[in-house]
Length: 174
Image 1 (cartoon, rainbow, N blue to C red):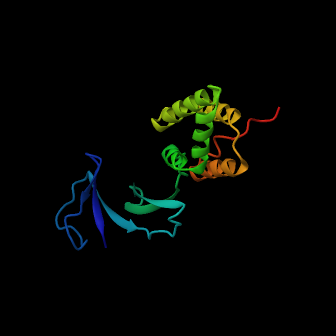
Image 2: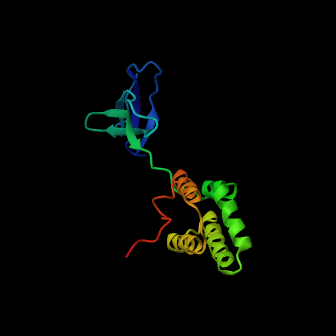
Image 3: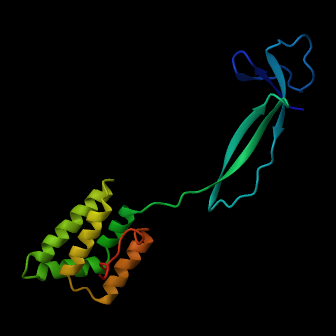
């Protein structure tokens, strides 16, 4: 049987003086209590969605010290701005954006691209402002004439980087 000491004066758990858990020879100080150790079995859990947290608790009424487990749910991963930007820079969509910006006679597409890149840099540097980023996306897409293949590619990149819940490629219809 595994045991521990509870030192009531210092409010600490102390090792039991015998390795075999047998009775202590001699008097036990009155501010010490012998606690029986209970080790609960590790519960089953889904390591993809959950993780285990070990816990300990003691009960002076029952003179027990229990090692137990809590099953906690993993937090969903947050938005991956770096992954999105890295995918965007090598995408056919971005190449089409650059081609259109460079061939435009109006400075508007280049200005819209600069606003988007600035908002993206803020996101990459943990200064994300979802409203500013959303406005930058709509401004840029409003200045361009992307075909549906590039829009689908852009939407896929948003989804893969978990940004599709934050940003929309089309402004809401009012």
